[in-house]
Image 1 (spheres, helix red, strand yellow):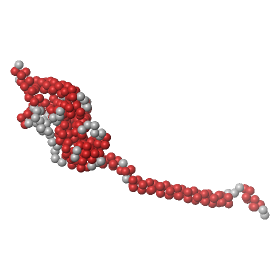
Image 2 (tube, one colour; image 1 turned 135 degrees about the vertical axis):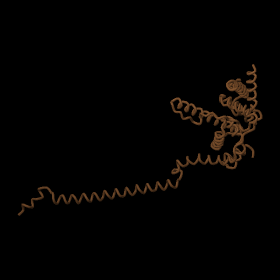
Image 3 (cartoon, chains in turn purple, blue; image 1 turned 180 degrees about the vertical axis):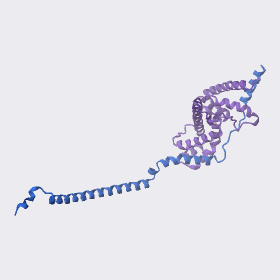
Image 4 (cartoon, one colour; image 1 turned 90 degrees about the vertical axis):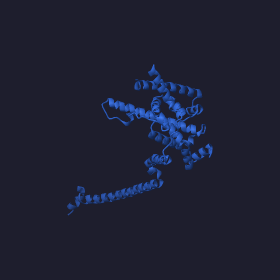
Amino acid sequence: MSENQLISALKEGSESAFRDLVETYQNRVYNTCLGMLQNESDAEETAQDVFIEVHRSIGAFRGESKLSTWLYRIATTKSLELIRKNKRQKRFAFLQSLAGNDEKSDSLKQAHFVHPGIEMEQKENAEALFQAIGQLPETQKVAFTLHKIEGLAYQQISEIMETSVSSVESLMFRSKKNLQKTLKSYYEKNFRD
Amino acid sequence: MKNENNIENKISQALNSIEGIESAEVKPFFYTRLQAKMENEIAPSYGRFSILANLKLSLAMLAVIMVFNLTSLVFLTSSQDTSSTATSALDEFSEEYFSSPNNYDYLNEY
């Protein structure tokens, strides 16, 4: 089934077409969400939300971009929404702790994440890197995740982020600089002899 | 100096650790879980307006309300008739026993 046929079938409400779409893109959507959210259950929930959104708004999809581009755009947007929500919860929990409420919510506990696709011998290094990725500004995080974790080319990232290729290059440059800075600070604190 | 080199090496190793990363895969039965979530998300919105969504039930409720209204109207009208009959009987009784003094003139007619 070609992409246009798939879109037409989706617009007609075909369940088998929707199943095809999910089975084709589920791992790409999940991997993107996981790279950004660094939590498996959050990534699964968000990936489900992405497909629910596609099901809900396929009628409004004009086909000006590729289906995969649209899916990645929804996936990154939904992931950023959840990151912002989690940050708000953390701030609220912090204020509660200042107010004397010692009950710490789960969101305050910093989980150490290692992507399941990382080689065994690289897990320790990757853990520090993912902590640093988590501290990147939103646009840099999106560009870095799509390029380094999902393996997309700058051209496709520029289409997903609706920006120019040179802007993506700039985001990647700045993200690497920021990662180096964060990692330097991390290693200076933890590994000074 | 040695420390600086160590840290630089660590940074370099961390940045390179992501090279060759494999794509993560969803757990089995992702589509089944997605379907369940979709059903859960859609069901409450129908549930909220289920009475309105069910046209037959709405029409039946409308018919019951209309029957109730008509019955009330019939009862109200008939109770008004009853009260007017009761009023006229009371007037007759009052006229017979508590009529004005002029009506007692017959007592002097002997």
